[in-house]
Length: 408
Image 1: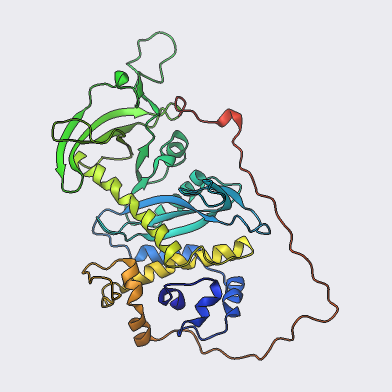
Image 2: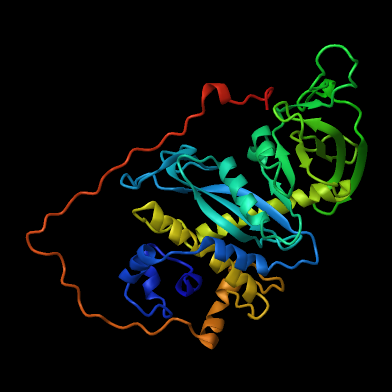
């Protein structure tokens, strides 16, 4: 981990052995990934102990992909989606998906502290994995958190599966969804109605009068209009009402500045003030910053590991190194490169650039390595076996469970 933090550029995993803090041979990296057994539950509880309790805890959940299009012998690969083309310039490529729950410690900036970062297996979905992770995290939190989720999680299955978890949820919704209002009072005849009137997000003719309208000027986004409706629900989650929030950017004359609005849904206890709740969702993008940081700076997707277990053990080091940087941010001095400007509020990358002085002062808790001589090598006459190629596992959704905008 010390070598990773001090190495800005690496072309393969063995390049880490060239770092002055790495005291062993290059093959020890691969041996460590085979022998280590990270205790995820204990590490998570250790992370939670560092979270202050004087303010509301804000969590963010998301998932990303580790592209492995050429690893035909890697077991349990699935087709993963990417924002940019990976293989043959297509947005889908074979690889591994990883789900993450992070704590967002600041109101602005790129810091995100992961509490759980785990692989999504071929028999799991991003939603089922996120639900399980959120349940594990909330068991040990000292207070009820606010969790932020992207539009992929803004659906009825996620609301139903997280109903028993003590966490408030602020989710982004797709603009083609259809919600339903609460039914009218029971008339006394026939079966009581479950749903009220239809509220289609893309059809203004189905919108009712909002419960509150607010306009404010944001220093970065300009003029903002926020509207909110209460007592709406998904068709498949009629017992779980939510508040619907519409955020729009306006020009000086009141016309729309951006044609695609931001739809948010609040599910939980008392909602924060309308002027704050939409800003709260913007903190979710810290998870995207962390994904970019571990891929570009911590070399998460650099190694070509051969088994899913090795990939998981290597991935467990990413949260540990991130927390190490967070705890060191107040004791390091900024060490900018010649073409960089000095800053007061250090980012994770700038803290990593200054970690060399910390390592020189505190040393390492590891014992000095003991050379064991040269290996005897491959025995003469022993046959070599080719590694087994594994097919790509295709996740299929049963036809009866396919969601449509009308049924969501």
